[in-house]
Structure formats: C-alpha cells, structure tokens
Image (cartoon, rainbow, N blue to C red; front, side, top):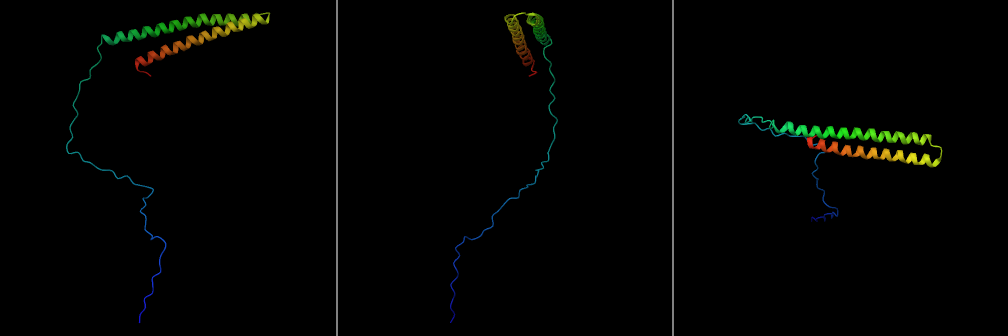
Length: 133
C-alpha cells in the first residue's frame, strides 16, 4: 500500500522576479519624414517712421547731456567743499576746529554720494527706456 507523504508547508512568501529597469536608458529618436516642404511667406521689413525716431533719440540725448552736466557741476562744487574741509581740518589748531572740519568733509562726501546715487538712478531709467537693461 502506498502512503502519500504530506507536503511540507512553506511559510515564506513565494519568490517572484521583480521587473527592474536599467539605470541607463538609450534615446530612441522618432524619425519623421516631411511629405512636402514649402517656403515661408516673405514679409517685407518695415522700419520705424523716420520722423518719430530721431526726435525720440534727441530727447534721450538731451536727458543724458543734462544728467552729465549736472553731475559734473555737483562734482566740482562738492569736491571743492570737501577739499576745503580737509585742508581746514589739517590746519586746525584746536580739537573742536578739527572735529567740525572733519564733519564738514564727511557732509560734503555724503552729499556727493547722494548726487551719484541719483545720477545712477537716472542713467538706469534712461537705459531701461532704451531697452538696454
């Protein structure tokens, strides 16, 4: 008589192969052939109105010239007052005179810095107007 042996019970989960993709994937281009090639429509190039463009340029040049002139005048005036204050500080006999001359020099330099900052803002605005920034 044949007796069947009982199968051993597997308690572990069945092993399945996991599908993994490779770390490198190759590029597979899709080649598309054109059925017909047409030339693009030619559009004529239109320039800006000659009467309007030079006037706008004249306005911008005028603004730049006035900016540079005011900057030059401020530089001369404030530079002279700063130089005077520095010499006054060097020639001062008392501490009080030396301190007041030094303060005057700092005020002149701060005023020059303010003029330069304002000029920088105006130049930046001119550049943005022209499309350069």
